[in-house]
Image 1 (spheres, rainbow, N blue to C red):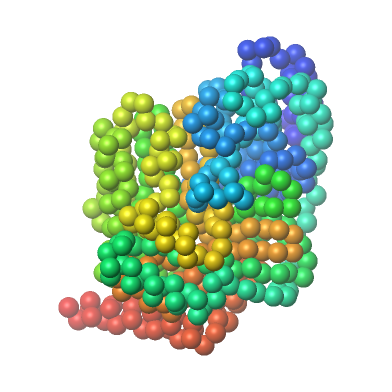
Image 2: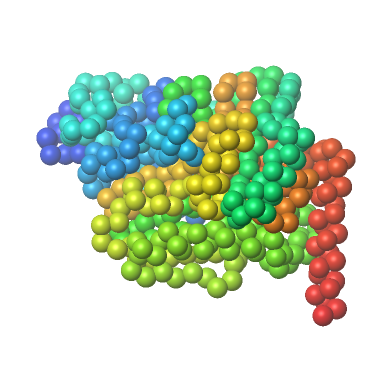
Length: 463
């Protein structure tokens, strides 16, 4: 049935729902992804969460809240087997502007492969839930207030009125040098430093249309929108999974080490070969993999890790990735996995606490949801992505985030250029030539990496 008919049918089932029912679902005729995101953009019910799995098999729009909490260990007590809670945790638990947040949605529109459903959750009042008083009248009103989509295509171009980096390049160079000194003094082995770029646009940006553009161009990514309140949207297209759990089976990965992409096929292959064999990048990836293994070993009956990293090719960059899988010990739940794995060495550093202390004392902004963990928890399955390649949409203001791992051999200019390439994942949706129009030093560094990669390929061929 179509969406309007499904809403009417759900209202009737809610009216006649029995006390033991916790979820009601109605099958829908297929939509397309553009319609789904347009539909989300029209809704006025908050919180809102959009999720597309990395393999593209699942999409979810979650609207409104039956209840919410800030502690994932409490969250697991607030829903039944057919239900899932959506949300995540910020980069640091010490932050006040963005607290961990999980909510059981009132309404969900979901796609599992080609199967579409519209569902409502009927929560049971439980201790610890915030706003858990359930009223059928409120749910019926929420269903009645769902709005048909009104597509508003993203304009071909936006004018960027102002642009500021936090930190700017001079401060960034100082921070990288300071971090390298700390590494030399064995305070930590790696630290990930981040940058926030704040753009002021000439017109308000639609977060849903922005993500729509990103989905079309950035493949092999999780795509998400998270908005607790109107006019503040966190949006991203991230290649990195924190973990996926299916009963007691666990899947995670070490994603670290970065090189540019090239439109020239031979040059692109050269860059890939350089990345696969570059000591600095392989060392950075190995640090992340070893840290994940050390955290999982006490919590898993068995662990498997790929011996060699694979190459993940994205639109603007390519990464090294080690896949890791295992079987969890009895009693290891999502709360413990989130606490033990997040933040990973890929977005904080190693050892974790000294790296976090350095970030807290030196980064000139609050990361908020950036490099936190977003996703869902369920009784049978849970999955979280690492919220990189992300942006915060605040009307006419767009905040873009990117980070770079600092290890021995890191160079401030090269790491700045890596930030530029990562930011380009989303920035080029507004400014298609942004990377090519970088300043002279950045462009020179970009060309030098290509030359370096070509030299490596030539040496390999001679060998």
